[in-house]
Length: 131
Image 1 (tube, helix red, strand yellow):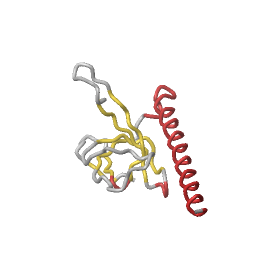
Image 2 (cartoon, helix red, strand yellow):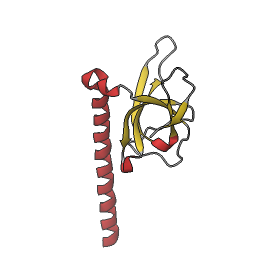
Image 3 (cartoon, one colour):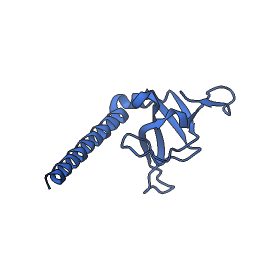
Image 4 (cartoon, helix red, strand yellow):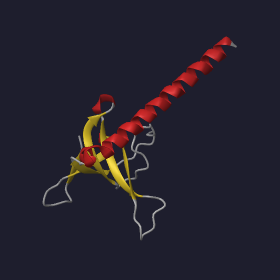
């Protein structure tokens, strides 16, 4: 019974740490969006989502994307082993009507290997792998 109690306490502690980390991440995201008139939100470049990983659901991850979505890359090489880009995507808010378009900005990590950079040249159809 003691092992069960210890296990339960460890799980509770872990869940509390995850919750705190999620709160910190949300605060950092709000600050990124709101500080300096959104200067930190100025994209370095854009990418097309080419693959959506099946197991990709952490609280720092940019989720609910589909192949073909275009994301703004705000920062390159973040997260474990620098294998992610900090990206944003602007979405129409669920409660919006066509007359009153409201947009929500989602920010999070997305794997570099799943993105294809959109080249900002005369021909906008050119793409390359984002690193």
